[in-house]
Image 1 (cartoon, helix red, strand yellow):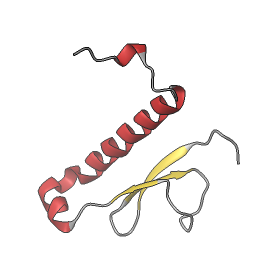
Image 2 (tube, helix red, strand yellow; image 1 turned 90 degrees about the horizontal axis):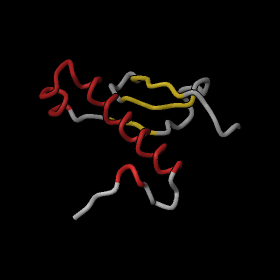
Image 3 (cartoon, helix red, strand yellow; image 1 turned 180 degrees about the horizontal axis):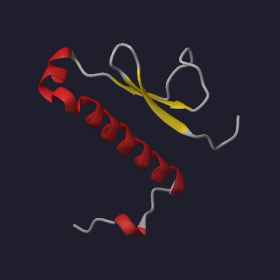
Image 4 (cartoon, helix red, strand yellow; image 1 turned 45 degrees about the horizontal axis):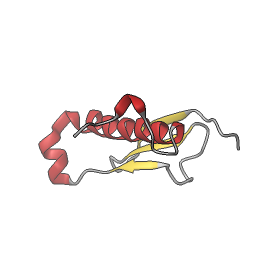
Length: 81
């Protein structure tokens, strides 16, 4: 498998949002998944899928940033106290 793969975000039959490598079958384990409880789904309504997509997107962004800066040093995002 190459280091680069296209990713796809899918919703399974149980309402779980799953991030997978493109071309991998649904029998393979997802890279990331988000599943809301029935109570959370009722509160979020039609926005549950949008919120799960944003949550996974934020995680992918942070993971990509971490891989680009493995030493933890980042001049663009330094916090001064």
